[in-house]
Amino acid sequence: MVFCSPRDSDLPLPPHSPFHTAGNVDDVSPATVHGLALVGGGGRCSEAYRWLIQRSGGGDFVFLTTAVYSEQEDDQFFADMQKLGAVDSITTLTVNSRAKANAAEVENTIRSAELLFIDGGDQTEYYNLWKGTRLQAAVQYLLQTKKVPLGGTSAGMAILSGLAYIPINQGVTSAEALGDPFHANMNSIKNDFFTVPLQASTITDTHWSERNRCGRTIAFLARVITDNLAAFPVARAIACDERTAVCIDGNGWAVVFGSSDAHDFAYFLSSRSMPDRCLPGQSLHWANAVSIWKLQGTEAGLNGFDLQNWEGQNGSRHDVNVLNGILSVDIQNPD
Image: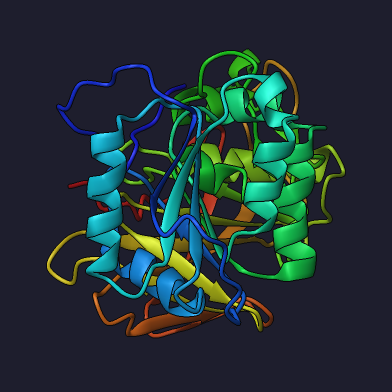
């Protein structure tokens, strides 16, 4: 279940120290403003990075990953980010073992950050390597105590919610999930990784239109309700197309960034009832399933969403049902 990273390149990736800093190596402590950027993967969303950097006070940026990047790539990423706003430094933490995730250097570096961004990759690897470690505790400190801006793309977005899809096998397709919401690839949805403000009953999904994921996200919600992970009035999902970001402030107001000239949309799903049939080996049937707000991403972030009242500014609202494993309407916009 490997996803795209925003820092993909054709540069060689020789082994190097897992902890590399580009920029000023001395710690700074500017004031920050909390915020959460959820990016759908598939490429860099510069507007989301700019939004995060503006909230970081020009402080120290930590990029958390399991991938190995060359120092040349690290330096180029730092230069790219400096074009978007003031950045004191960027430290790339390659944490690809539980030993590293329990290292004091990793914990201290994360706790000192004014901005944290989690790379794309494999959220199951993140869960297996990072859960229950000093790394997890440090990220939780940033989320709940220090309240600095955080973001994640693809797999990074998948884990920045109260409910996270952590597949044991390969990632489930919409056809598999709708045909059997207890399909082996649906296992499992976790609620014991990160506690994210305003996201306790929310699950996220990425690469949405491009990978035809509307059906599986609705099946996620059916399982969330059936498994008593969240009650149907508050069971919700946030999904993003590629190169699209939902950026949420501390009051629960979200803006959607993307290209105004592309099919870059974000989707906010809420359940309307209990599923009629959500059983192993049978197709999902949910005659009064979900409402979906669909908002286009723009460079200026013109379209917004109120997570507290679950109401969109601009955009369009659609009711989508599941009749014996078939969606009543498909609102995706594949490129």
